[in-house]
Image: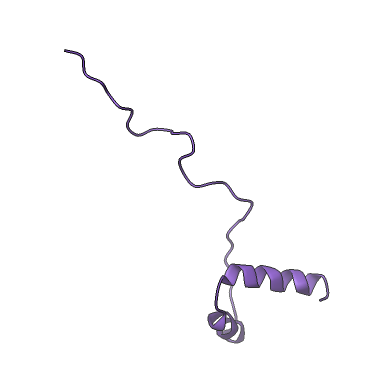
Length: 59
């Protein structure tokens, strides 16, 4: 008797987390900076990225 086996496990097209250009880093925030970060509503990473770019670009 033949049985039909469905593929289980292994690599599947479209599966898994998509690659990004982001890299996670860790840094030590001072108490003052931590207080500001904790008050941010929304995406904290976006805020930090924009703040660093504004600082570098002199805005």
